[in-house]
Image (cartoon, rainbow, N blue to C red; front, side):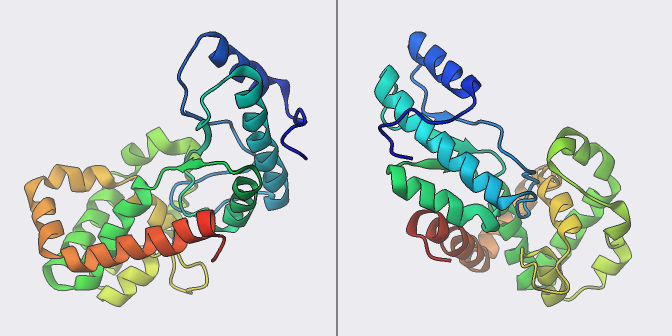
Length: 240
């Protein structure tokens, strides 16, 4: 599709964009609902080919609407719960490159998990804090998961017990939490639970922030590596 052509898109998106323009709303992002599931902290679940077609068409729609309706030139799509969706990043990159477009992908959740990975990796009291966070999240899992029911798929039977996690070494905890589907110890159920378990760390208050300061080097290494190598590179540079 050439960006000068009207895109083949469901009319709802064009209607919404036209209404935004008509009301003079200075929109910066718009978040349509995409094909498939975008669960918190884990990869895309669905037909990647269908997503590729849909996303490219939506980017073309925005390019058309910006020109047709005088919307802000920097209007971009927002991919909600888009972090860690590695299997569709090539499709997103290709569409962005074709239309010289931008995208909004929220990475706060994956960054929080990298903080936990950095703590667990550091061992000692940092590992014990990560184990404590898991224990409290496990105990409060129903309350923590309820607000996110539409964007998580957690099987309680696949969650390790608190006692098991308390016996883990730094390496074992990191292997379970880090998003590496090729690793036999990776546990996406544990990862999703801890993703929505950020409130546990918040309730720790200054104690948690002190740990972030003390183990800043390990945390910064994991956060930076995850954001740049696993998100920025494939999304904007086209390199896995």
